Every structure is written in C-alpha cells, then in structure tokens.
Image 1 (tube, helix red, strand yellow):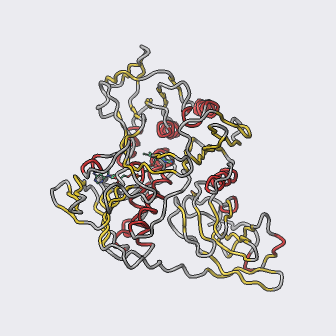
Image 2 (cartoon, rainbow, N blue to C red):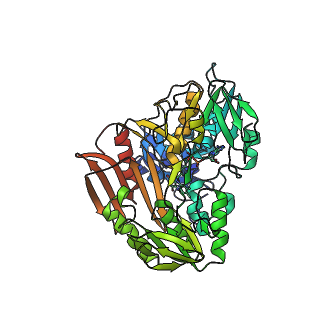
Image 3 (cartoon, rainbow, N blue to C red):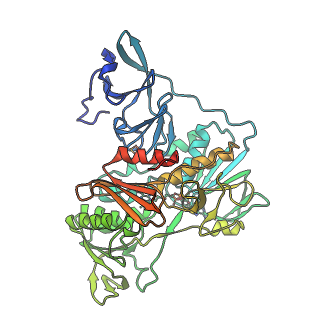
Length: 507
Ligand SMILES: Cc1cc2nc3c(=O)[nH]c(=O)nc-3n(C[C@H](O)[C@H](O)[C@H](O)COP(=O)(O)OP(=O)(O)OC[C@H]3O[C@@H](n4cnc5c(N)ncnc54)[C@H](O)[C@@H]3O)c2cc1C
Ligand code: FES
C-alpha cells in the first residue's frame, strides 16, 4: 500500500520507464496500487515491493549490497532475486516482479512466483525442540519450516501468549498508537499450518543432555535430537521494601504491558525507576497517555555508558521537552503505598510504578544441563553449547564475536532473531558461523536511535553532524578503532557502517 493516503507514488511502471531516470541505481514507481522499487545491479534490473515487510520501511532509502537490499530502519535484508527475507527483523518475503525490456524502456506488470522451500540436508534430525517462544525461538522455528525441515518441531514457552513483537510492548502498543493485533508475530493459525507444536504456559523444568530429553514442569519428559535453548532474560526486581506491591510493575511480556496499560487508565502520576532503554521508552509511552512521569535513576546522564555523554544529554533534554521530570543521581529506597522514598531523602507520590533497571539472563535450565556458563551460556561460533546437540541463542548466549574479538552477550531483538536463524540452520547440519554485526534500535517519541557494532568501553567518540538537530552519527572508538556507531536519521550511513564492519574495513 502506498504511503500518501493510498495514492501510489512515482511513475506507472506498467507504462514503461527509462534507465536514464534511475537515481543512484534505483527508481520508485507503482504497478496498479502497489509501490514497486526498481534496482539496477550491473546489467540486471530487479523489481521488488518498495516497503519492508517488518515495519514498512522505505527500501528506496536503503543500501543495495550485491543482489540484496537492506532496509534503512532496522537493517533487514531482502534478496532482490527471490524477495526472501534473508536477514531479520523481517521474516516475510516480499514480492518480486518481472522486468521486461523493450528498447530503452522497462515494463513491470506481473509478480513472480514465490520461491519453494529449500530442501534440508539429508542428515537432518527427526525431532527438534525449542525452549522459548521469544525472538530467538520463534525465528528458529519459522526458519526451520521455511528451509524445508519436515521433522517434528515443538516450541515450548512459559509465556501464556504466542510469540509477540516484544519491542512494541514498550513503544507504540504501550503508548496506545498500535492495536493489539499488531503485537503477535504471526496469527495463531500459522503454528498449526506450519505443523509447529506450540505449547504455551508450559515450563521446562530441566534438561538431561545425556539421555537427550527434557522434563516439563508437570513431570512429563520429551525427547529431542536437537535442542535450542532460547529462554531469554527476566527483569531484575528491586530488593527494596514495597517493590512487591500490585502497582509496582516490570515489563517483559504482553501480560506485563497489558497490566501497565490497565493501571495507567486510572493513574495520574507514574514513577519510572531506571533510565534504561526500556525505562525511558515506557516514560515516553506513558507521556503519550497523558500521565505525569517522573524518572529516578542513579546515573548522572541517561544511557551515557552505552551512547556517551552528548547523546545522553540529548536523550534527557528530549524527554524533558515532552514533560518527563528526572531525578538523576538518586535511587528509590522504599515504596509504601503511593509514596516512594528517595535515597536522597525526598519522596515522590505515584499511583503507578514501572521498574526498568535491567534484565538478567534466564540460566536455570542451562545450569540443570551442566552447560558451560560465563555470565550467560557459552557457545561457539556455530552457537553450540558445551553439550552435544544443544544450541543456545538470544539474550542468554555469549558468543565469540569476530568483530570485537571478544565473547559477548547482548540483549538485542535483531541479534536474538538472527542467532535463532543461524542456530536453526546449524541444527540441520549447515555449519554456519554466526558473524552478524550486532544491531539494535530504540525509539523515543519521534526520534529513532540506531546502533551497530559493540563497544563494551570506548576512549573516544567522534561526532559527525548535529545531535540536537537530530541528524548525527557517532563513532565509538578504542585505540583509534571504531567499535560501534550510533545514529539519528542517518540511516544510510548506519547501513554503510554495518557493511564496513562486516568487511573488516574502517567504519
Ligand atoms: C519491552 C521491551 C522492549 C524492547 N525493545 C527493544 C528494542 O527496541 N530493540 C532491541 O534491539 N531490543 C529490544 N528489546 C530486547 C529484546 O526484546 C530481547 O533482546 C529479545 O526478546 C531476546 O530474545 P530471546 O529469544 O533471547 O528471549 P525472549 O524474547 O525473552 O524469549 C524468551 C522465551 O523463553 C521462555 N522461557 C524462559 N524460561 C523458560 C522455561 N523454563 N520453560 C519454557 N519457556 C521458558 C519465555 O517464556 C519466552 O517465551 C526489548 C525488550 C523488552 C522487554
Ligand atoms: S522496517 Fe525494515 S527492518 Fe524494520
């Protein structure tokens, strides 16, 4: 569908366009009411749906790499030949269109057939079990079926809801600007159609790696040939008096987000404890619901450790412009009913409290299986754990990152999905090293912040552009080497930095 009140954009491609009209190798047009992007790669011209299947990002603003195009918003990648979503966060293929040449003109009239699922290797296992119905678990299950795995596939999730678009839970859904039917990653029918045995509200109690079976909370056991552990993380609870009261919330699941929305309806003032990405996204969403919002956090600048002082100041000012009141350099010592006592001695009254002080990986099952742990589940480049047949992906996995040269663990949606996909292929015997450059995004009001790479620490930040003007790219360096890049509305430069990091060039 076109952006501007359903009016398709650009020339009618069915009536013909000339190669000389391409700009930077691309031309946006339409076929009927469908927006279509033409992309020239060498002597070939491809035609593909113009918008990303994730959140509808405009691919014309993206980056063409070989015969693929990358989305400017959250770095999904599509094959220009087949339309396949070859990199998360997009999981659905786009249509590709047939391009006919007549003299100097190109005509686009028909879509091509969708590609058939690939054949899995003949030695594929019979039974795969996935523990976790989050980003990594879902992406793995979806890709196993997309890649033609025909064996038994079970996905177990302690959550009562089928896999959801978790990042949305603190953003548009919480703000009230996205309806709940945007939240599930797939409709319920997907799982039965794809023969994925999805069992919700099902807790796995332990893993027996020698016998290759798992035990469920009700005592039943289930065998596996390959197991993917994708248990994610859980919010850290505050060890202070009063943190267990009903009006004190954390946010991880759809149920958590629903509970905050329900509480916000009768509330006047919210207290957000922690100036984390999630804490501040919650603050923004509650402002959109017209609540008075106070944020208490120990640091002097929000997000300074990850994004640096200038970006931290910008984020603070942005939230203040929208009416958020910060109490930085402070913590909450106790919550007694509506009154929160601050360590500095003052107090704040709030009828809704959201705690966003970080998460901790859920490692109990990995421990039960005797897997090697190192502040997460240690995996090799194939995402295999120390136990044969058991893989790990997502927030729990600490993997050898070839770009930083360190074993790292991150809590990013796109990384979790891509690891789920790589683990899926490796469970089928592909032996594919996971070498994606880490990427995350965060959204505050109308300002998206994108981040590629991984800088645990940095000794220099080179700022290109104007942070307060919302047009900037920051390079985080250590010993002169760029480890990571954050940006606001510099999407193409962010994609180019990601590509440079992949290719080992200076970003
Ligand atoms: C509100 C919110 C907003 C976010 N926004 C962003 C963002 O904008 N950008 C970004 O990059 N990242 C974001 N993140 C982080 C991102 O969502 C996580 O990195 C990602 O979900 C991790 O995926 P995962 O599969 O490892 O774990 P999860 O998605 O947490 O899934 C874990 C699954 O394991 C299940 N499970 C755990 N233990 C058991 C057990 N014993 N038995 C059965 N099932 C079990 C859980 O029920 C769940 O289904 C956000 C996170 C939250 C909570
Ligand atoms: S809109 Fe394209 S990756 Fe999100």
